[in-house]
Length: 249
Image (cartoon, rainbow, N blue to C red):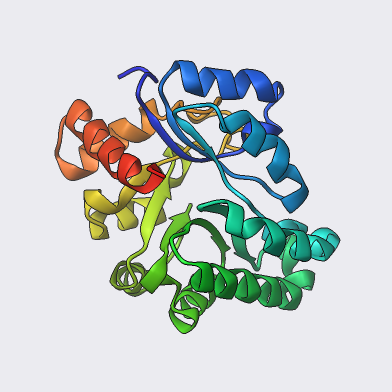
């Protein structure tokens, strides 16, 4: 499999070395791409680049790792949210580096999710480092799963939490680095292929894995196909069909 007609459901095109080239590459490769942003101020430029394309969608985000510095942009997020169907990257991060802002993260995430639930028809890429339970609690309490599509990015969780996420209608975006780890393998053993999407999280994957550029999901497809006992072409086609359903405006 090459990168033509791939799916990259979570990457940061605006953080690549050449943003314009990254957008052009995804379009020329017919890669169905969700270009997430980390701050509301970054959305306008991304949306402008994606507006005339066929294969890239820009998502409005406020990254939990930046909440300590960018919580003041929440009002801009709320202003922009009605203009787009795609939200991300949002979520919670209880890692050591970001735990000091965790209470503020929760307030921002709950407000973002409540807004999305009110607006409805959003596809939401959600970050959840060491916070699987807390993220799912918000999804359930706000009822986001009834009007929107939660997509859990790089979701590391126990089997009961994975099953709970499935019951809440969540999808899962996975990358090669993630699914070489035991937690990623456990997820593929639990989740039906119809709920799986590929991602690169470019440019943030470790250099020893694939995903060195947006759309480079070849290694992930090989591992997913092996996990489900399918050939790579059929696996890629199933994932693309799912992505087309979610990204159609």
